[in-house]
Length: 90
Image 1: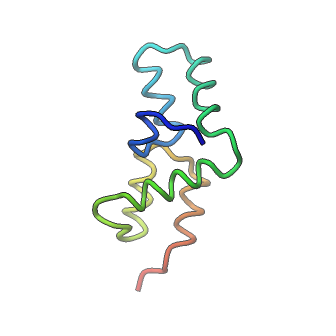
Image 2: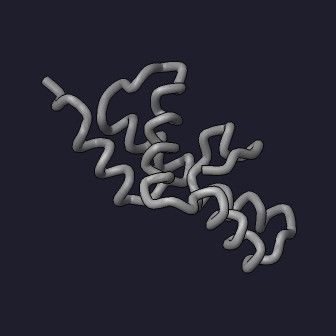
Image 3: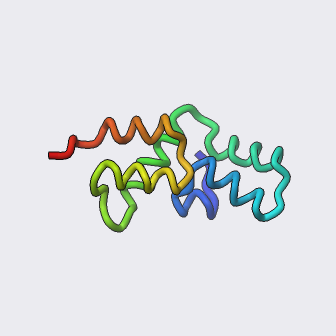
């Protein structure tokens, strides 16, 4: 997994693509950049776990973690995988 300013902020592929396009980067170039960052299977999942672990509030509850990862631009499948790994709420 490559690194850059947007990945260090804990952004997922959707958020990175949106930020690049917002700054005027052509969509094909943005897609290629995202593909180079998340090139290996499981890279997005690793990045999402890292983003959640660095969260200043801690993992918190499942709903809050899901919303956080969604705002960061992670895919629904990755979010659901992480939520399934979390301890059930009491």
